[in-house]
Image (cartoon, rainbow, N blue to C red; front, side, top):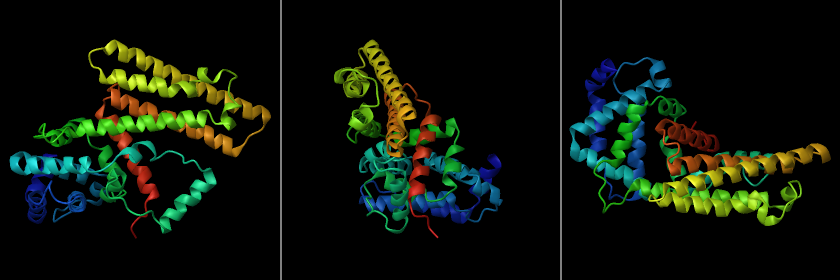
Length: 327
């Protein structure tokens, strides 16, 4: 690592380019300009500059990890630039929306398998109108290289903690806590997801293939109320036992939802397979899995930064699969 850093230190053009980027960070600029700045910053991370490297270092992500370390070192040497960069990064998160990224990216759509395949193919040639205030769109623009996932996956826990510290640097109360904003969007995504689970699970096509029981006793009916109670208890830090009980209730209702999915699959085995019903059952299972992931992140039951990073990498991979790749 030290050999690499030494080589970056003497890479004149690369260093000048970085100095210029750090100087031009402007949290008050229009969102489009801030996004262009972010794209250029990540382009710098991928560029070889005038440092002699082997191709493998670029393709495996080692180069980008080293440049990330170099970037953080330079920011530590320049507190004013570090503050400006941190505020600019936070401002982008404040001014973009993450709901769709968390609750639709990587999940099956309402259409069937073939309809979804056609939709993906269509987006290659007729992409949706850009929405620069969507965090997913920002990810598509920033992580434009196929090697980006390799780079992100190679970030070790210590470096990841330093990156998180950069986002927290000089975060004043007046500015607002960026993590509070993201937590709120995760909550919205969870509420959206459980609403979808309830709606699809109570659909007559699914309901008649599940266990016989009164509507209000069905886990797909109960899931929204149990989730709302969990989110309420999670916000009340004075009663950790209530949150624990609510978490157990939530896990229980998810377990029962999965049991009902198994009953529906068994019904199909007996009375005949329907492709559309199988697709709906798989979709509900995917919604349940995403809900579990977000709840663990939201409640801090799984606060392993590396696992959260892997979740983000999976979202980026799905976004890249849907995006038009540059020639």
